[in-house]
Amino acid sequence: MEKKRNYEKLENIISPYKAVLGKAVDTVLEQEISKYPIFVLHKQPIELGISLKNEINTPNEWLVNLSTLEEFSTKQVIEASRINRFTKIYKNPSEFLCLFVIDEFGANFVFLPRI
Image (tube, rainbow, N blue to C red; front, side, top):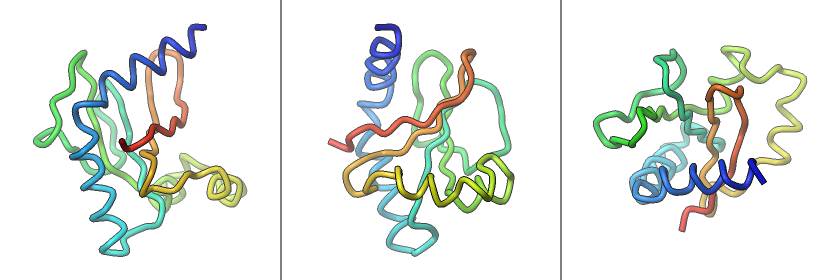
């Protein structure tokens, strides 16, 4: 039940920004930067991805960065031995936003529909 409530809360935070996030994903894909764009949602400054603070002003002090699987691998957020597994569960970025959510409970990947 708690997990569902957190998912709904996350959906409410992201919902107004889905169009902007979708455009960012499309840019990453069109420029062939990566096939695996990942948004990092966090509340504390981190050195992962490119900050989207000028494009997105989320409530509750959430910050959004745009990263890629390649950066996650380089910075060892995802171990090299787990990359293949990650690419298998990664959902089509034309249909879903991949979010890496860092909060007081830890860090998790979440896929939200773009629409």
